[in-house]
Amino acid sequence: AQSVTQLDSHVSVSEGTPVLLRCNYSSSYSPSLFWYVQHPNKGLQLLLKYTSAATLVKGINGFEAEFKKSETSFHLTKPSAHMSDAAEYFCVVIPMNTGFQKLVFGTGTRLLVSP
Amino acid sequence: SAVISQKPSRDICQRGTSLTIQCQVDSQVTMMFWYRQQPGQSLTLIATANQGSEATYESGFVIDKFPISRPNLTFSTLTVSNMSPEDSSIYLCSAGTGTNYGYTFGSGTRLTVV
Image (spheres, rainbow over the protein chains, first blue to last red):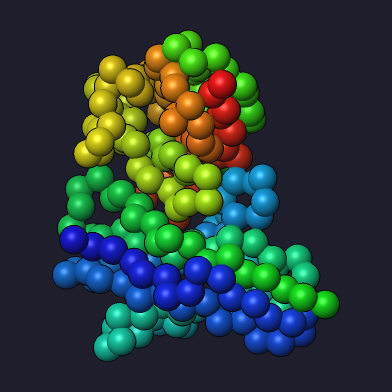
């Protein structure tokens, strides 16, 4: 079955330091991959998406992710964390063999940013 | 991308009652989905809302418990029926026109069953 694994349930960084949120996917087909962010008591917001174009994807708020097929990874990075980045982040895959294009969510990574 | 208005944003309900959640999209979309997010958990797909036909439910979810309507390409409802405290969760709808555009989410309905 197609899935995503978020390797860290919590990541803690200091403001101004780099952010790395790790995601590995499992798919027999070329997948579409997304990162979503959920701030407390808010809905989900799309950060960025990979849909078989450029492997380095730039998103909103300075985030970017690189699709690495050889490593089956799609890690999310940001050069310098802001306090406002504290939130829950979800890696999401759409396996391209599913007719209904269903999103499969990872378990989420909570990013904590300290002053 | 589409913008979704979801309501109610939160509700506290008595066990045994039902609650209907509405999602209105500001443009026609191909796909609409309903998710449940239990406290501290990730999102689990309940069903795909099909326009003009019965919804497609995921394993563990049934139509009698979670009836869904989608009368047109911009609107859908999810009803949580005969509620119990175990149904306390955040329910979210999602809509989109395909993988190249991503999917937009509503702001969620925080349901507490007492």
